[in-house]
Amino acid sequence: MNKNVEEFSKMFGGKKDLGKLLQGLIFARWLSLYMYYIRKLGLADPEATKPYPEGVIPPEVEEMTRLAVERMLPTELSRETSTYHGKVVKLDEAKALLELDRDISLTNLEQVIPFKVARDIILKNPDHIAVIECPCRATKENPCRPMDVCLAIGEPFVGLILEYKTNKARKISQQEALEIIKSEDARGHIHSAWFKDACGDRLYVICNCCKCCCIGMRTHILGIPILAPSGYVSHIGDDCSGCGECVEFCQFGAIVLNKRAEVIYDKCMGCGVCESKCSLDVISMRRDPAKGEPLDIRELLERSEVSK
Image 1 (spheres, rainbow, N blue to C red):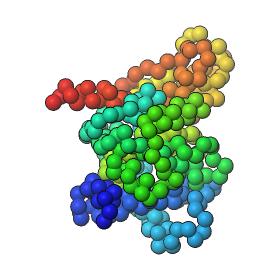
Image 2: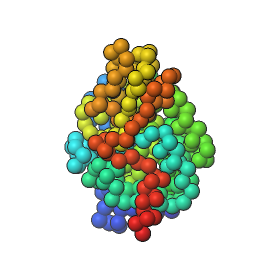
Image 3: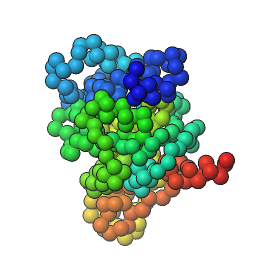
Image 4: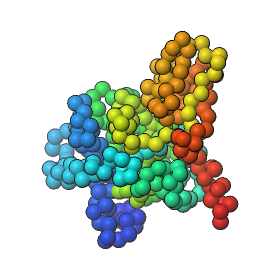
């Protein structure tokens, strides 16, 4: 067993979780194939496109990947059982995660990550960051560009996907990672932190998502609660001119135009895209307890230090 696989396997408690470890290794090595089967089997998406040419992947690997996805799918229909899910984060929160300069261990984050499984933030060498081609974009016809927008954070994830060359993985600096999320933010795409049981029940990647390609967003829009809101909700001031720019950019269809822009509260995920796109600066993001607690790593670390 090589070093990266050995470090990855330590998250699964030895032999008792061999099944989950195997699923994690399949997920890390054949990520786009894994997401293809989620798109095809879970969403019945007619635009699902195989990410690899015929013959590139051994038939037994493809069969194992399909079986792993089939086994996972029945658990994904509620927050009580979901083992693969995400949390919307505003741009400043995504930046804070990417700027970490020390190892951290935050567990039992049920107020922040409202799922029973996979909600820890345990980062070793958080300055180790790799960018990969988005597996959601890679499995969709005519995807958004650029492709390399998903950011794996910390070890053992970065070392493993670099070794496997998963989705053209390449190591980047924290500054390069910040430039990627700022560029995606300028395109009106949302930032989300993703958690998975087969990745040690913890945070492993920050994605930059669009409703046209992202499997997680499409799943959420279809009514399956795989994505948790940021903890904020959009508020539109009285000086709104009704230009409709925010309506165009909202990835969740949470703003409508009725002479002036109006927020559909239940649909708003608090991503902050509307705020950044408002040319009149009349949109603000307001904390809302009913939308959960923000994944603000700075606040969580301060709270952790106080409790020691």
